[in-house]
Length: 346
Image (cartoon, rainbow, N blue to C red; front, side):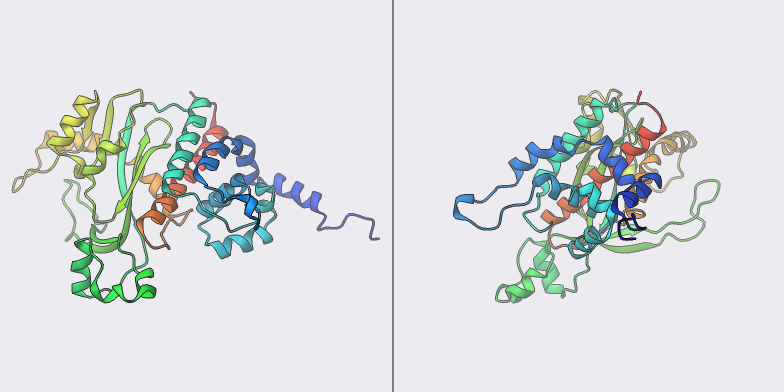
């Protein structure tokens, strides 16, 4: 009886996972994670092994663990439990935890390396680019008015200087901002009721996607109060084969229009409503046409905040950049799987 393969036979369970359509198996088949090894080795400074100590974990294994955390929004403890509990995770990792984690600069290098991989598979940045930003929530801080004033000035409040434990728990980089709540609109575009402003605390994920494939090509992370329009220059992808750039009114300024013209780009940024005057019909019509294209970027944010449950649970912008950057990279991996399954690249 013991010689017969049982229900929990490992090979049979892996086969059942494959038959059920394990997405991690598909990801491992389409993405050669060894292409990340060199940038990872450069980013992860190793201690001198001649001094002894526990040997470091394989950098590619560490990176794949970060991919799992971004895809499934897992904390370190949850990740360790799921790796031990889920066969799909074990197989994806080829099977360990806790070592140095790549920082934001390293994540950028990995993101660029995967972008090269996408281009190598025919997914060039085509048909123009769409720029937008979304607020990523962080743990809210309960600070007094004097503490808020000091933080906005880039200083450490006096009461915190002699309390290192408290200082370690305070996020001095995240900021409060106000965002518009969703309001239904009439056929003429006017709001059906009063617009509601909702306070939000955290960071912003600024991205640029290519129109053809919906892949993130450029990204930046700032505090939530940062002006969207000032980030535009750093989000323009010079490799995109078409000139149009779509964005909402937050990005419209004379400075940005001149910058786009210098780079040979064609502005498709929404027009602002004249102050104290009704929106001219021609401009309203132009905005409606631009919205039909620009709205595609909202699907990226909906995916990240829905399926990937994007939020920041760490302290400081350096860790927020690493977290959000990994989410952007993991999103591109998911998008790559979908594009490969849909049709051959064009």
